Image (cartoon, rainbow, N blue to C red; front, side, top):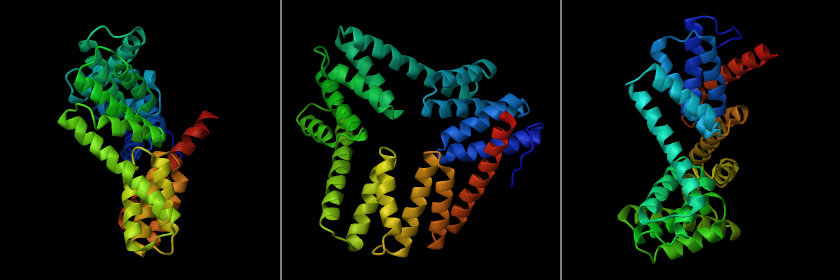
Length: 316
């Protein structure tokens, strides 16, 4: 168990760094960023681990909206470790961010030709992959309303707008764009993306209808699990709602309740609510669900809580 000692040695720096990596892997990016910053400022982390710290810290800040801080960590990585594979990855991330920014500026000024529309579409897809739904929506809209986009780009922009609307909670617009996109020229990749989105939309509608009808049983539990999983990355609040219902529902079997509780714990970690996550992992263990993994995550939360408390204390 970690303690309140300052980060004043390489062993201590590695200890806190390992805790930060655990939080990073669990998607608790804000807490991980705080610990990475503390280790970085201590100056005690061995150099063979520093490139990973700089890259991971950048990813954390990218996920939490600190674009300038992300770029600063990645630039430091490129400068200090030229040729390192992680430096190459950092450069690619910076290039993507710059492409999105340039595309936004170009979209605001209007598009001159199909090549510019294609560049804007690529930037929109980059923003989509980063789950920056609002920025992606703006860029897809620019392609969709332009008069110079190719047929494939126009179709891809409709698929993108359907996805963005879905992720932003506008189910009606998502359905409308998806239905229209099905009539357009699409690449095989865009058509596959569209079909996955349509499946997610339909799963949500079916789940809502079954809930309204008061239906339960094994089929309902399976359908609820599928719907929650479909929203795990894109709409965590929705996924938490569904998993929480399953975890506490008497009509669900023990293994399903344990799995649902475990997933609420994972989603709570991603939203940086560590103590809520801890409670759900303990709840999952009560149903015998992967007790070893639950305990591993509880131990990580306890370590992180202690490290973060130490940072708060030293800042006062």
